[in-house]
Length: 169
Length: 102
Image (cartoon, rainbow over all chains, first blue to last red; front, side, top):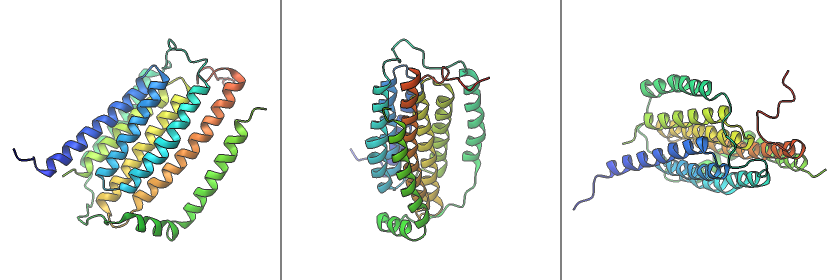
């Protein structure tokens, strides 16, 4: 038995990871148990990293797993554990604006999906560079040096601010 | 192959799911988690455009790296605020923290 064509395998991989992303995102939003919601968020982050690999952005996929799954999701789990006493299992997790929120989401899709479907973009047929990391490093140090330094200041401010806000006294 | 539209549709659907969750959930930590879904949708959009329109410049990936950094800083600060509120009010439900409503 011969293997199917690589094109079909790539398309099937995209459909599988897209379905996994959207399914786990829906479970994040609809789940009644908050810890299940956080774990589905971890699954969403992993499948978005797989989408980055399909887009040939491997460094970004590694950064996504390292930072989002390794730091941000762990932070959310800590916060859920620390505020656990008042959130029982039988408390409803959605407020009174479910129908207007669904209407807003559908209107938003009604604006975004036709643009995605119809838009004739000037696609380029160049292949992506085989080594992205030296190019990324060079761009961060030359063209995007100012946002890079500002990022450092933002992270410092966030660190100091989070420590001050969460202090005991 | 996979055309650009597929990635844009995926990003739009993920963003809409995040919007619905951020408007609907009661727990403040859940609202922040739905914000992360929206930021991930934006990242997919940026990287897809960068891959299909200017693949030799990695602009979309650099923007996505900055968005990931900002999202991490915002998650840390938002959760510190939620913890401070929890310590004072004993609740983290967004519809019970209504001191500033008229």
